[in-house]
Length: 323
Ligand code: AMP
Ligand code: MN
Ligand code: MN
Image (cartoon, rainbow, N blue to C red):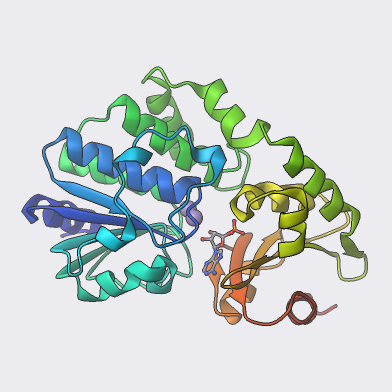
């Protein structure tokens, strides 16, 4: 039987070159899984380019990733790639500007682990049970017979440690620990990576966090907590939107809440992050608003105001919990 993994490996072997793309506003798994395959292609003689949609900016906490300087601006991405590979994207829309290239690609390989994945590729290497897209890239390297190297290991580890919440979420399986052990064997700078990713922020960001936590609203009956970041907050504190990625991880610590939410004013609308502890499927809620994600971590972008979006989310949580 030919598996998705066989098909994915065969497509890469057959292609003269590959064009890699991850989701807009990339997180650790999107960047880490894409750059890992980029490093592998370079090490094994397969011409590759890697990119993501405008705004073509990487959050400062990912600046240590090897290979950021080996990326191509989205403007220079091939218009109709022979083989395009997407990372950590549940739908073509998550590619932003690069969705056009995906539509024109002769072959489209989708590598992802979102339960909401729309299988929009001609080949879909999709496993909702995989803790990170990085896990799937490791499996693919194995099928290709491609050995890992240190740069690849740092990138894969970044995807693994971010999507498992530092090996603490329920998706932290034995496969995750086995991969972490393998990656650690490449003289991985674990403490350095952890500090960049989780333990270091500009003072200005901490002050913005204080303001946002100060205004957070807890609805004890609904077991729902929310806060928001406006463009005025970002300007006032001199903080960039991508620096605020970890804010939801503070809000979700609220013991009295099952569902937590952060809303952020962005150029494309209000970006919403949702998290749940154990009962509510926020992936389903986000999907109902045109977004996606996982059961306990999901998001969407709204064209309404922060207040209207928040009211609609409360209503959806009320429905989901019967509260
Ligand atoms: P975030 O809250 O941005 O960290 O995202 C949490 C999860 O939801 C991630 O797995 C994202 O891939 C997914 N997600 C966030 N925003 C969107 C969106 N606009 N559309 C689809 N999925 C999203
Ligand atoms: Mn992601
Ligand atoms: Mn992921």
